[in-house]
Length: 208
Image 1 (cartoon, rainbow, N blue to C red):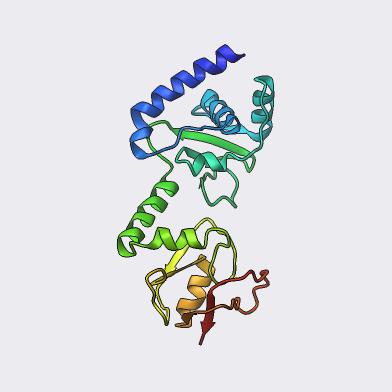
Image 2 (cartoon, one colour):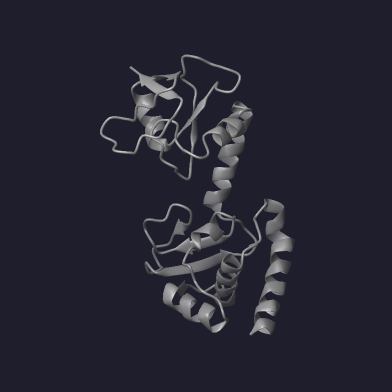
């Protein structure tokens, strides 16, 4: 079994080196991610169901944690039939429980667009990464939600060396922007009305 996996891995490493490494696609470092990717590669370019992945991975001595979306967010171009997916392209020809490795030459376009947007944000707001890191343990500065995306909100009353922007989730960002909310750096968190999130300690207060 190990020889089969080693052979698959060697071929996949070659494809990654030739095409995807230059796009900063990450090669799996954990065993769980690797064996899921090897399974998708074994079926490539055909789709595979979660049950088929379970059987293939179990046969090769692993365990499928059904977290292939993390591979997509490492840059691998994977499609899904699950209409709720936000990290992978949704294919109408796939069943809800199916995944498909689409390309070994192109990265995940959703991931690529996100990275390009993040780079644009970093150019506009050079301290964005620093601010996000300050809020990394609590997520959105307003509601505390930890989404996939954080957006820089620049309408604040007091600008300091650290906070010329604050990171908000998409919903809070839109909510504030639509109401022209001015955020003030303070010691209190007030969440958006009608949103029942737990209120962790924060340094943001909204004002109308």
